Structures are given as C-alpha cells and as structure tokens.
Image 1 (tube, rainbow, N blue to C red):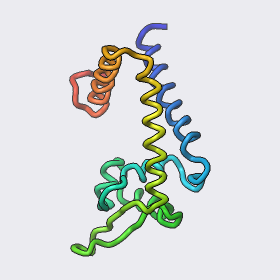
Image 2 (image 1 turned 120 degrees about the vertical axis):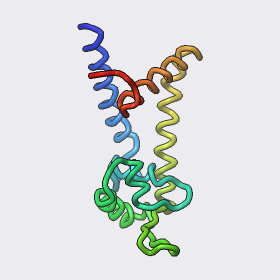
Image 3 (image 1 turned 90 degrees about the vertical axis):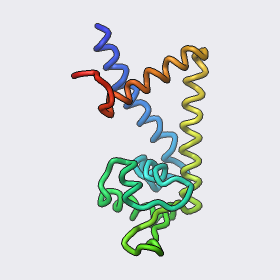
Image 4 (image 1 turned 135 degrees about the vertical axis):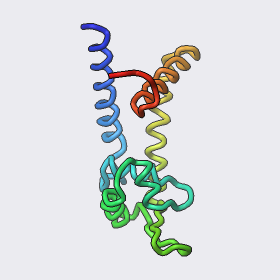
Length: 149
C-alpha cells in the first residue's frame, strides 16, 4: 500500500472511530435521550451567556431551520432554554439549562481524556509536530492553503 492510500485509510478510520467512540462514551446514562448531534449543539451553545440561534447555527455550519429542530428536542428534554431577546424580539436566544451544563461538562471531559491519552504517547517535540500537522490539515480542509486536489 502506498503512502497516500495508507494515510487515506488512517484518516477515514480515525474519523469514524472518533465519532463512534464519542457516541458510545457520551450518549448513555443521564444523556440517553439525545443524539451525538444534539451533544454538538449543546457544545456550540456552551455554558456562557445566551447566544442567538443564527450564531449557534453558524458555529455548526447548519441552517437555522435545522438547528431549530434540534433545539426543539433539547428544550423538551430540559437541556436548552430558548427565549426571545428583550432588546430585539426577532432574536431567539439559546442558553444551557442545568442538565445541558452537565452534558456540556461530560462532553468536555471526554475530549480532555482523549487528548491526554494521545499526547501521553509523544514527547514534546512529537506533540508539537502533530499539532502543526493537524493545523495544516484543517487549513487545507477549510480552503486556507495552496494544496491542490
């Protein structure tokens, strides 16, 4: 197998395995009533100040309509609070309720543990190289580099 094929196989496998592991680790116990996509909506809303629906939709690269369906379910299940802005009634503000904050913390802990497990295998220089390589890959995927298909 040549290098390009090997790298392609590794990236595809890594992507699929992270999604699968994330779902198995996060969507259980108290959080069985949501999907992994819902968990990502919770992450995008975050535990801070309320955000507009359009801001959250932008973070997730989805339409406001798509986000609304997820927020309906999350609101029904006690994760997300949806309110109209006092200043501008056209704006819908989203914030996490207590259950949503617990889900957010649960998700963050999963990612912290995953990164610690990966980085613990590398020395400082190797970890820096990995970080730079992943930054370059993200730049390419977002269209910010000169790599051509």
